[in-house]
Image 1 (tube, rainbow, N blue to C red):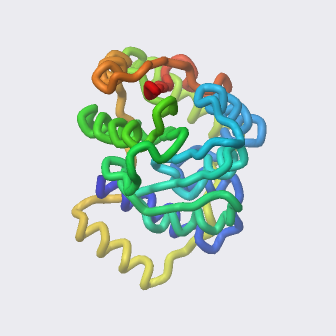
Image 2: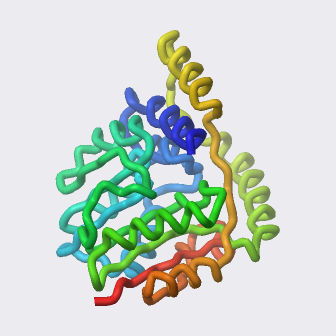
Length: 259
């Protein structure tokens, strides 16, 4: 997890002096900004909202909120939104959004600082692909499930499907070539770290014995179904948003906690 923290810290620090735009939020969260515009962003929200049954009377927790890429859209759909992330720099960047009904806290998904049955809904999207082990992923799901209220829902989204790994890699190569040809390189912040920032990055990397990078890990649908049985939850599998180039190779899981 240290390499993840290092990655998201460095990304968030790079946008601290930038005007907060969708491109910058994409950069901070490790997303390809060339894909995300108002249409594709709305398509994502329009997929998450019905799968979680969101409405203005509900409270929502997002685990792995980064600098607030999803917070901007999701917070407008609920009465109150809370975002947590392992990166302090990302949380600092998210607070710059100044969302009226949102709060942000630095915390790890496997040790959520909330009491049982606190939130109506809990979501974690495009996060679990960073996790190398199902065992650790299960610990986070169990924490998310612990803090959701009876009758509430937990959505774990955009999981890369082990059964379609080859197709996933084929799409990734094709998308990269197409975007490079049609749109050029992805947007990056105009950030030139000074001596202090460079020294801090080197120190942090040396201390953590890690480098700032992310990977894509794959999961079996059956493992999440089995986890749902252990939790005693109703478990449903859905597709990701239809405009996602990885549609068909990724899936969403929704756990509903019994009343």
